[in-house]
Length: 258
Image 1 (cartoon, rainbow, N blue to C red):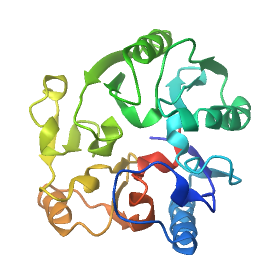
Image 2 (cartoon, one colour):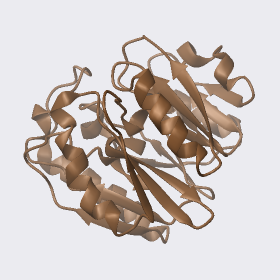
Image 3 (cartoon, rainbow, N blue to C red):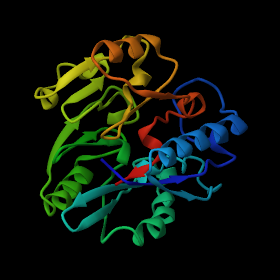
């Protein structure tokens, strides 16, 4: 499904970043160990991993997914550089641009009043689903829709106001036709054409999984979700995300993939 990823080493001051989890400050040595495990997993899967250095100026910069959306197309990959809704994170886009410039055949950048974070963007087939919330606004979605259309993609806006950071905080792909999600998205018309697995109450964090085509990666520590996946024929690999969870970060947040 993808053969390249970009990750960024966590900053030592990650605990000063944005979070509403209420789970305390991350243990930095453990955070770094979990990040190394994340990298190792992809390397063992044969995926090329580019590791960028930490940027202490931006505590949230490990969550590189929010800074850009990669748009695969027939002749290569375009990169849509976002403008994060969280003002403290906007400088992260300049930091990521140099790393992307040598890997994307075209770069498009958000302009004017548009706001977007990549955690609000879910790709299923040739359709992007874009959450519109406190981090991504309608103008940002409009600009992205225009950019993605150049490469044959449809975009579906998904407005919500339930207080979670991103669309993919509680909704992600398990395969090309199945979504895993929290109960609050179960009846959304935008996703009516997909098979759905609804995570048990209290395990909403586990709805952020990472579908890799021939593999599925899920956060460990959510036994009822693990049982749900197994009962429905999924056999994911599990990885510890405890320290990133403290900062509202999930599996998809930690990488740009194409």
